[in-house]
Image (cartoon, rainbow, N blue to C red; front, side):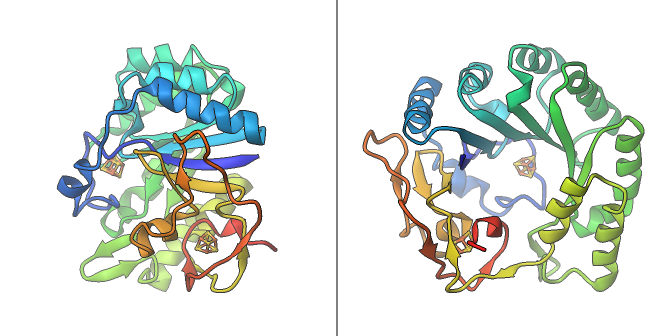
Length: 282
Ligand code: SF4
Ligand code: SF4
């Protein structure tokens, strides 16, 4: 299966201080480009025809603000495994319309609880809608240092209702320190402890992200089996290529009819791999 992380747009109705874009919303919003959902469906369908099974993981910004989001998901869901992250600010009716119209065996929703912008009761009401339609989902909680004190309470509320809960290691700057490398041992213990009684798959996913992996000169399948797609269709092998090369290391544009993934793994040129290291060839 070929996987894509698709940054659908740089738009969000929240302004979390720990967001990747917290210091540059004005800049990144200028990159938004209006491409109809039909063009995107055609592009991904072409990839599916060429490479077989595909998985599309939609992030942003807040994906549900995308124009025709419901139609986009319904159409992608006909031939691809689809997953999207959301702050669940979508209203209950629209959420129910969406999740009642899809093949739930091919949809995953990562619902992030952001304490500064959402009340837990309102959030859980929407999680119950996901449960009603058997949507594979999980609650995400960013381990921003000032939010760590309420993390256990949120986790307890989620587990009581039988929802999966995963701490997402904060990556960014807080009080002049860079995270995740600046988490104290005490903070790391808190994050690891919180994962003690969650599902193994979620535990693994969360814990490994606290650390970064040495990656220089390792053979990696990013670009071959996996890629990141920006909102204008530009395809990067991984997040580091997007960030560290200033956009030089690109594979092409997914909306281009001749777009191809790499044919084989490539040697990594980055010192550290912060998140996509599962593509390193063992
Ligand atoms: S909800 Fe997500 S995309 Fe929006 S500001 Fe918060 S972290 Fe960023
Ligand atoms: S090892 Fe990590 S940083 Fe290097 S190319 Fe692969 S995904 Fe990118």
